[in-house]
Image (cartoon, rainbow, N blue to C red; front, top):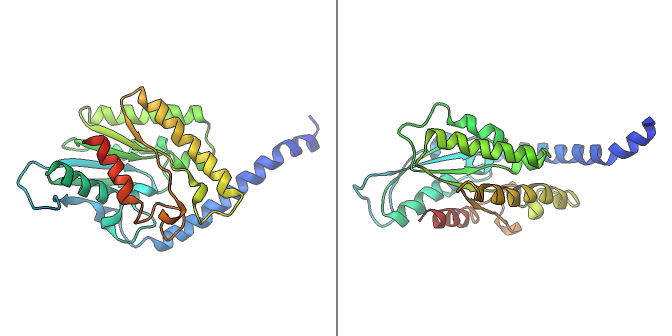
Length: 242
């Protein structure tokens, strides 16, 4: 094939890919500047809201990407791990020990590595946020499917009795940090991953919470779920668990 024709065929894809990379890079820089916490601050014991109790604590392990790491949220108590722990404690009237092992930028293929060393004692509940970075990196759906299923198998190998909930890749069509028409394109890339994950994992007994975040619910960085969104998302997760 002549080089000029190849260039015409590849040009739009290269331009789109480069533009997505630039936008994600800018958002990442803004995200880092706004991140005022360290991940380990999310670990700890969360009591039910009504009163402290001597009941045996539930053990909650949270894994995944920047949404689970709390990027874009300045108050640790409003991050997704802490919100899930708080609402789970209230719903079950049991304290919850939460452990967070999320890393910004991780794909589904990266998440299994967060299980090393193996959690001990094994958690009762594992909540995972993964898939959005697979979409942003334009990874093939078949590859994402294989990584998603391998991730679930890795989790079950170390915590066979744990309940698992996956927070699917969000639809970023409304993310204020992304200009149009990239917002529409990035929303399609991430949204299709989230929808596909729900279908794949239904066959493996894993609950999937699909996220559609209105523009008003994004955090200060305009890219991650904000402090008004995380309580709602946590409520959806806890509804699947109770």
